[in-house]
Amino acid sequence: MASPCIAWLRRDLRLSDNPALFAAAASGAPVVCLFVLDDDDAGENATGGASRWWLHHSLAALHADLKARGIGLILKKGRADSVLLALADKLGAKEVHWNRLYEPWSIARDTKIKSRLTERGIAAESHAADMLREPWQVKTKAGGPFSVFTPFWRALQAMGAPPPPLPAPAAANGSTEIESDSLDDWALTPHAPDWAAEFPDHWTPGEAGAAARLEGFLGGPANGYAKGRDFPAQPAVSRLSPHLHFGEISPRQIWHATEMAMADGTVSDTAGRSFLREVGWRDFNRHLLYHNPHTVDANFRPQFDTFPWAVDDAAFRAWTQGRTGYPFVDAGMRELWRTGIMHNRVRMVAASFLVKHLLIDWRKGEAWFRDTLVDADLANNVGGWQWTAGCGADAAPYFRIFNPITQGEKFDPTGAYTRRWVPELAALPDKYLFKPWEAPPLVLRQAGVTLDETYPAPIVDHAAARQRALDAYETVKQKQPAEISKGAA
Image (cartoon, rainbow, N blue to C red):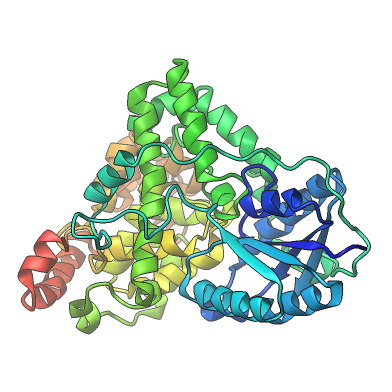
């Protein structure tokens, strides 16, 4: 085979709008696509169990799509630098292309690899493919990074639409004969027990699944997004987050498709802008992580380093199992376990319950989500948890403590969502669904509910837990009250 060009794929498992693959195909050289399963560089932040299930099916779909264009997909397990350099040497590659990632270890690794490839006389080029704008492109008037979303969003919009998506490469001169690992040998999917057995009922990993999800969303549900996105029983959200995380679709594709739908009247301006704003939040979280890499496992605001977190393994276990005694929280945690996803409104309530009602360190919750979410994106996960805990950049005020009772009553008014995931309470009247401990004994018996037997009693009292949280946060507020109360500028 003539000297090839390697497209090193990571979280960009698509053919369309894939700058690295496009550049490799445009080189005119034979194209070799490489995916490396590298858990070493990420360490404790390596891909979690639910995301590994997704990765397996996404790679299978990508392999089929590439094969149809005459391009092989080489799978290797190990440290990415060792695998990539060895393959480049073995093949006598003349170029290597990849799309940029923004985790601190990815940046350090990629910088090292680029240097070592250049030393070998191999052209190495990274491309922008995972964000609307690169983290260093969106700046404050002073030329620095943002730490508050609203001005960031204004600045991002002022830059205009992102570049248009690139087409998928046509059939290329590739090779399918290079030795590759077997995807099945990686054992990314669970067995004995198969806790992901229901995942295929909810998801179709791969570029085609992502395109169908976007088309279906823009074709109808998007018009209810602005208000409906807070109601978990309504089909008003896109559920594109895992497809975005694995790069089966790009934010640029979503942006331009949404604007096109707005232009032809399929989607209202209000709904379209509301949806694109959430895509902007994804960019913002990457912006924060890039400029503050320590926040992977450290508070953005150091005054929270002395926060009096509680150590309560029993309470944490009850939270993970969806057995806190608060039905709206438990519904979300059970939805997460069964489907690999949790509605964002419920996600905020469940996270707030852990860090504020239970005073358990946000890092424990972040680790649990990372292992159980199919859309476990580090920047979004860390950003969301620090926002909830109040220790992040653009964080929720410390005194915002979601009431798990009234949140359920407001955002699941018919109880359809909660009854689906907490079926043992299905026969309770709406009045008591989110506070079954207040139901009279006769009502409980008629509904087949026995507290602490068929469904747990609350593991904490809401009012007492709220006050305990406020007292704990007050100790931090006294250190730097202006920053805690108002948020970093």
